[in-house]
Amino acid sequence: MAQVRQAYRARDAAPSAGLDQVVILATLGLLVIGVVMVASTSIAVAEGYAVSVWHFLAKHLVYIGLGVALAASLSFIGTKQMQWLAPIAFPLSVLVLLLPFVPGLGHEVNGSTRWIDLGVAKFQVVEAVKLLMIVFVAGYLAKRPQLGRARFLETLKPLLLVGLLAGILLKQPDMGSAVVLGAIVGGMIWLAGAAWKHLFVLGLSSLPLLTFAALEPYRLQRVMTFVDPWADPFNSGFQLTQALIAVGRGQVDGVGLGASVQKLYYLPEAHTDFIFAVLAEELGLLGIVFVLVLFSLLVGRIFLIGVQAHRQERPFSAFMVWGIGLWIGMQALVSMGVNLGMLPTKGLTLPLISAGGSSLIMTLLAIGVVLRVQWELSMEARQQPRRRRSWQV
Image 1 (cartoon, rainbow, N blue to C red):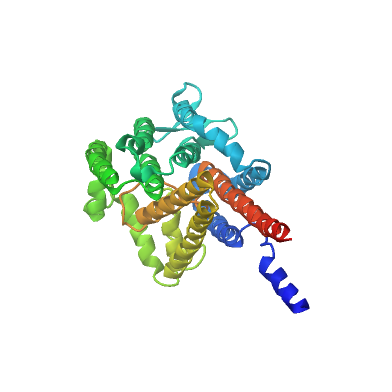
Image 2 (image 1 turned 45 degrees about the vertical axis):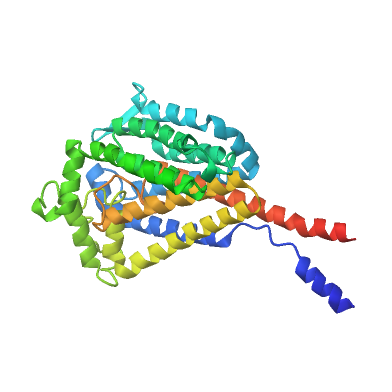
């Protein structure tokens, strides 16, 4: 009889309500790689900016601390409060995205007005907009559980709103972020079960718009450079050819940490957009594979948490987590694809690795949202066995 009772206790034991270890360890692993690579590239980059060799590393560590602090603050904010934010998230996105155009507040870099000057630092507003739009679309989809049977207009609405944001982004200009934002929302709608015929029509209708945007002279030049970067290796193709040289020098096991040659004035933006090329040079194919494995673990685990939320009938949490998984996964793929010469050059950072406070802080905050959802799911599952036992008694 004692053994039978013990078996029942083991079967009904409440699962642990701790934070997901896979998400934490994968995030920590990517952050450590980022710190190492920012330290490695800072020496050469700092001389070009006439600052201390530890300037960029120190800023990177501060941004990590801010991001972790913001993620930790979500222990006081639940998904119910986030859902209350959903209806106003789109108007907030428009407002935030227009801030760089405000005289005295906007900050221009290389002809692009994507940042606002906060005095102590510059913030790229689109990084906040990505999370706000994920929250908005998650709230929208949570109220439409039968999207596959809904009218075409119901599927079209969120994409029209993203189109408005994309128009503002193209004025900054920032086509890379516009494409990523559209892909995130499109992916969320697909995961919500939208009808294939609706998605097919939307996909076809977006092609002329993308083509028109790509015909901007400097964007068209990037596409032509991507097709054959060696046609003009010292001008339009300089970034891509130098990145490919870095990747080729790395071979299997790399040239060693700190031994990169391409980061020494050859590869522009070696600490941000092209940090993955330096990583490939110093750590080789083994380093590339290790980073891919970490991103796969992180994104895969995030999607599994979304599936768990969907099974526990928490649609808002599920769509929000899936949106964050799409964001991190697609931005990582685009950034690595650009560095490996598989995609045209875009100004996108590699999440959790590149130097860049806006991206780093908002990505850590997004991972904090995922962990908050996972913790709530664990707490809910922890209470269910107790309810069942009390009912049986």
